Every structure is written in structure tokens, then in C-alpha cells.
Image (cartoon, one colour):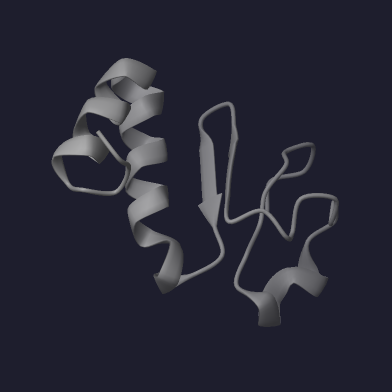
Length: 71
């Protein structure tokens, strides 16, 4: 993990993070760094990436289209 950045990781790797205050979050965005807990969080990770680059409205639109959130 990059020093001075918040993040999360796969449970078996969380003890290697210098800042463990966010390890229970499924996805963490800190500046240009986006981390997630593992394969089960891939959709949330993808939507977090869309939100970072295209904004929250676009991420919500995509989430609704993919049936991730209710319309």
C-alpha cells in the first residue's frame, strides 16, 4: 500500500497495511487509489472507478442499468 493513503485489501493481506482503519470497508477511494476486499466486491470496485472518472450521477445510472440498485 502507498504510505499516507487509505485502503482495504483481501482479508489475508489486511495485516500488511500500515493504516488498518478502513480494512472492513468493501471499497475505499483515496485520491487516485481505489482498493477493494476481493472478487466479491468487483461490481462495487467497478462502480467506484466509474464514479471517480465520470462522476456519481453516471455511476448511479450504470448501477441502475445493471440492476445493482433499485430504480
